[in-house]
View: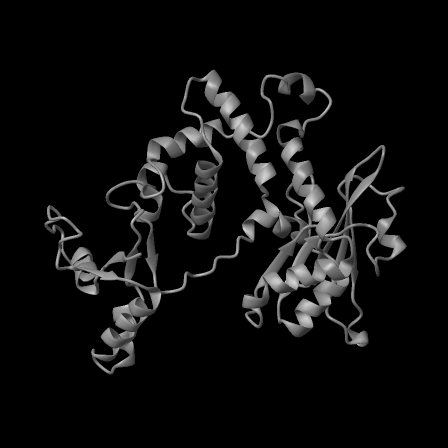
Length: 335
């Protein structure tokens, strides 16, 4: 059985010309070559490539994007695709996205607006991530989609009006039952999705060594830059802070779980302490270890509750005395 493919001449014409005459029958067009086998087709590409310039760059440019079109209309290219690792979906799983889509559509139905889907939601999240990475989050939406200051990546993804709609519709719980649930749980608007993410983090970080490997892998591009890494209590450990400081030349600021190794019992005690008071502990320089600063901050009384923090960026007892809560510099930086 013979198959018809467009010649490279036609492919170039399709790329370089705005309009080409497609009225002729492809089966009778001189620009279409019919091959009886894959072997003959590959030989044609090889001979055609060898007849062109001997320059390697020119050969690559002329063959890497050759389009091959099957009778069904399916297009192929001789260049291998770029592989994309979907790391994002390891943290925000399809199950979580479906939950957000469901609750967002509940609100959209009430307000008689267009429903969303997983594809659009991923695009919406992508825009939010780009806005944060580009420091665009504080700019007016009209400017980001405007003709003067607008960016193509935003306008090409979705319209300004649709982005604004999703921003107002996005939901993580059932708003119809929120009022009643909020009487017992102030965190209820995000509780359902938070638990799903929390469960993922718990499964992925059951051991401190696993936590360290996750963080070390993520910050590898930053090694030696002197930057700071901020982690929550599921990932923060003294061992990680010391490794980042000594091996990667990075500082660490994060909250700590009270059961982490190397945390003194003195730091965990809360009885008899005043609300919003802080206790500090510092690594003894004589030990030669990384300069770790530990903080215990009382956040609540009756029952007393404290917040544990770690920092290799701070090495003092500075506290913001100008406010009632008197938060430490470590706490303020983490927030």
